[in-house]
Amino acid sequence: MPKDTLSITDNRTGTTYEVAIANGSIRAMDLRQIKTGADDFGLMTYDPAFMNTASCRSAITFIDGDQGILRYRGYPIEQLAERSTFVETAYLLIYGELPTAEQLRDWTAQIAAHYTVHENVKKFMDGFHYDAHPMGMLVSTVGALSTFYQDSKSIFDQPSRQHQIYRLLGKMPTVAAYAYRHSRGLPYAYPDPALSYVGNFISMLGQRAGACEPYLPNPVLERALDLLFILHADHEQNCSTNAMRSVGSSHADPFCAVAAATAALYGPLHGGANEEVLKMLRDIQSKERVSDYIKRVKAGEMRLMGFGHRVYKNYDPRARIIRQAAHSVLEVTGSSPLLDIALELERIALADDYFITHKLYPNVDFYSGVIYQAMGFPVTMFPVLFAIARTAGWLAQWQELLLDKEQKIARPRQIYVGPAERAYVPMEKRGGV
Image (cartoon, rainbow, N blue to C red; front, top):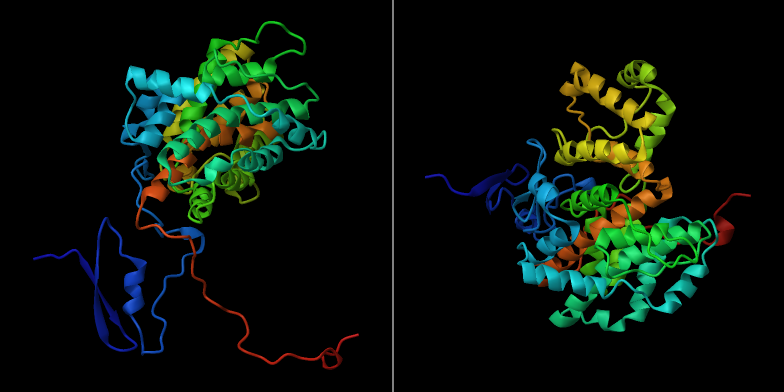
């Protein structure tokens, strides 16, 4: 009769151990019993970058990279992209179920009630240099919000925790819009709670100084950005989510934890990937030069940005959705030479055995940068847009962490490879000049 266990024989001692298997994994602490003697610490695993280590059990996002599947709380991303909105999807991620009509109305109203930030936040942001990167401004300002809302430290008080979720979802687009306007030398525009979540954000970006009427976004562009927010809302235990959970495990308030997650997203290997795609498309310059660029990629001379993914070994399901959105956006904004290059690059690469064999398919970053640029966003705003969307997932992960009784403060082990004990050497005996 098969058992859900793993038998491990330690060839150093000849001892065999039986370790339980649950959910396709073993507990790392079960390996600690494998010792060579009483003074042995026990066996550990060495896993740089957590390539094969699960740090939590989560019910939020499911990914099957081999099959190209992404689901939020069991719902396929394709269905949410077609039928849902970002605000509704945020509710789903945080509470685990799609809202009723009444719940969605209340949820939307509560978030909109927190669009406005304290006037002193504007003074704080005025202290940044005129050419400060919007993402650096976002990281700093979100962390500073912790000092404005000190009740946020009551993380195990459910009503207080709920209040911080409203606050963060409501204020992230406002702070992001302020960062954008600061970088453009424009006066800050107040939010309009009568507009949709994404519509209000776009309105704050485009509002003209002294205008009496709000800037109303084109509905096609509003829907496209809402769609991108849905696609970026969560993505399992990526770098920034891991940062959110790690900082959250110390029981820091959610503003500090989101600031940490945003800082992780700031890195070019995470939130800056779509900017690298744009640089590549500009370097190629025209459709006619795509074939030559492909040859150089295969020769190892260049990298093909926006293709391949650490998780997906198939076509990123988000890329299929966003590809269609790109065409809708460009019907409004006008044609883009970069999209023409991107389409030709995708066409040639997907028909090439080299890329098929290496399972290099377009990912979400391949098209998102083209859309953002067509909508008029500078590249410095790309990771900021990512952060607004991902806040929903971060908060869902943070709340799940706090309510998981198995979780403790994050504290990975290390394998020490430095020198053994040695005596202190006085200055006069150290040699040198």
